[in-house]
Length: 360
Ligand code: PEP
Ligand code: MN
Image 1 (cartoon, rainbow, N blue to C red):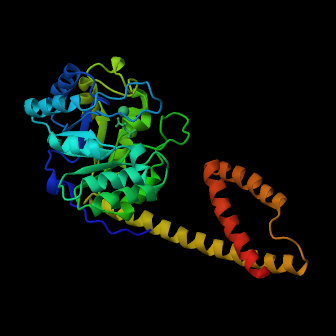
Image 2 (image 1 turned 180 degrees about the vertical axis):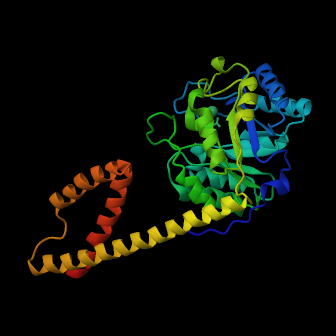
Image 3 (image 1 turned 90 degrees about the vertical axis):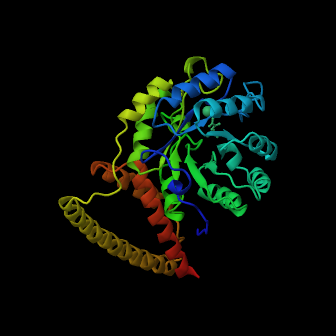
């Protein structure tokens, strides 16, 4: 996949103190007091740069709290006036965009359910044509990198070049979290669009306060550009996502405790040792490729051999035997079952393809 996006670097349009952009605020604006009290507590945390609150809430089932709607825009404007913090709200259609723009919202964000729907994203892109406002795009709920890229392309196509991606996890199964992080997906996005800032939303990944810190720390260790965290003045009483929100006072400690590492070090001994370790990896990769190539040569001979004897390529029993022996072998070397299964699957798929070419 390739893509050409015109993206402004974050610091060029959002000069904030510190290295990481921190967005915080309640999942939903519920009442004027709750919104203003949360904002005023967050304002005192110097590390919080942008205030968020959801006004139109995309809910899985009707009948649960679906957001305060347009009324909340007045409260958000008041937050801006009293705290001087810039504000951001979620938009899911052209009507939301229009109302947010009319109320001087500083940054818009597109939620995960909306990103998954190209019709909605295009509707928002059309509503933004000729408008110069920053837009943050959460990953789609399904683990599909191209849907995420597609949404970024659609919004960028409307001339929006102040873009941020937000990683909030994917609704595939995870043992402990509400949404599976699939960390490889935001990393692939970074590889594909290097200038695009990527923030992590540990609140929606975790789904509970318990896992919040470890996820945020991991995002920092992966060199993400900041965090969007849900914070509520009285989380237990929150009308949406009560289990994952934290009090502003806890957020202050949370941010204090985050360990920020630099993306590189000029320490000569670090650089020398890293170089040595990398050269070992280079050698090992060469050996892996050499071995895989030898294995494929044998597959090719097996293909000829099966053809000579008029035998089918795919042999279920053999494939089962490979998995049943390689997985425990990997485990005995400290490698995860799922990793070995995936690796053997890839190798086996290629081997089958190679054998089939002999049959043509
Ligand atoms: C939210 O940020 O409150 C929200 C609804 O998030 P998401 O789109 O990631 O589910
Ligand atoms: Mn939420």
